[in-house]
Length: 294
Image 1 (spheres, rainbow, N blue to C red):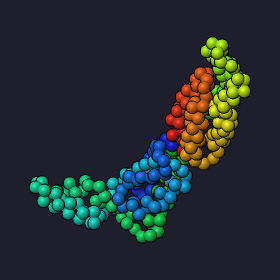
Image 2: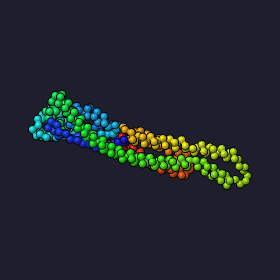
Image 3: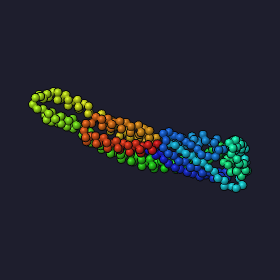
Image 4: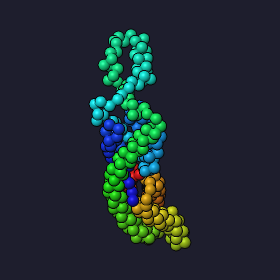
């Protein structure tokens, strides 16, 4: 089943006197890129969290927002001395630029990550519990994200399949028209020669036949039409397979465009050229939709 690369999911979980909220959103991207926005002291969990996302998402830019709010006003918190020192050092560096002003205790306490709960500073067992809790909450948010991506992916696949049906209709019309191109050319060429001949020239049927044969060889589009049919079938298979298929779809669309362009350059026939224009318009719409398929 095709998945869209656009989606959103969220979750909330209570742990150690906190409510932890997690939001995940995804948009188009060529690869799987995961970005985190979370308290600095959770940086040690980032590798596990990233693996959690990558195990479930194949492609797209995924932004993960994590935040916590204390449910207990009396929860024990300590100063994060390393963070406080970094803020004070930055303030001293700013004064070198002539910037005036002093940091107050209230200013420092309002800065991010200055206070950290004792539960988060506990031993390895407690850190492991936090890691497992965050991964579980992230999985809950990813459930919502994937559900949304599935719904939109189904709509994308439906629209692409509808447009492939239109392309197949145009291809079938081309298959019917292709044999008539040479016959029409033969008739037009004979009529033109007869109109130009004032009686001083002898009509050579052999040379005439060679000219028609050369035209038939140059304008033959049977191979291109057969390859187009193959590409249509492969697109349908990709839309219904499990796993990422967007990049393969993009490649097939490029191949279909190449076949259609070749038909347009070979076809010396107005109706065929009109069908080529219609095909290129449909392929452009498919390309836009496929750009959002995982």
